[in-house]
Image (cartoon, rainbow over all chains, first blue to last red; front, side):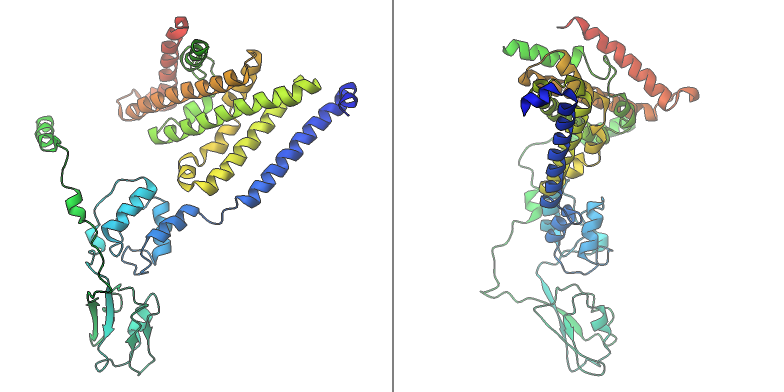
Length: 210
Length: 192
């Protein structure tokens, strides 16, 4: 075989190029199947970190759209339910600076909350049902509504539309079952262990201004 | 042995700098040097592709083309090999490391068809480099390219806010700066 190829240079050239192309074609075809990516994988990773409250406090219509926006360069500090811990996780994933929560989009609540409808005051207007992003409110027109506590993400969105103000946001009572070890306070993590000349910096900038 | 390799490396980075002395890869040098960030991304992608391309082309030449007496096919074979290797790597990176893909992203396919990449492969043959030498030469060429690109991008970022006479603004002052840098790099000629 090799001798035949060496005797006929044109055959050899053809065989070499066709062989190379065939091998590479197979390799790329294999890679296209084996390493297929649907959508943008970084969006999925960001989406997993976001708390999935679907509350829209970030200004996007849900967690997935906000994840897509972050992947496209949006700021990572617009998710109050995720809080400081969420920002920290996002910053680690995307290799960005940790920035404080943007107060414009709400404050981080200390404990997860659940909506509670005072049922004897409910007039059955269904407005809270339409507002709920996760379908956690059960009821029909002119019928009393109630909240499925295990589905509620505590996003506050149902409080505003209620015409008779019968929805309360209840902080989850801390019981022996639900108690868990507190994460270290993010403020205490900022305490300066290493000496810096951060104070001296102000003087320098004033000098520059002068 | 080690001295030989370090001389090869320094030679490729400074003395025979691919961009400023051999004038290869000028398009990305002028094209993506407007912002330091893109210049960094391009540098990383180039380092990756150049090193990989020199290794692959070396193997292709010595194990496929030379035994069959097909040395004259080297250009087209190298183009094929480099394109496929880069495409394959891009797919793997995209799947396994989305973050790295975000950094290298568009630059990987962009650098594939660059003359510096093919230039390294062909120069490796001309200089009759062994596999290790070819690998180092490719890496050195890429480091030299990155060095110059990042320096140039940093200068252009300052030039963008500098008070330049109107006729020289934009590409013109870029060309002049590149020329001056090239003059500077010619000064390394006696180093090795």
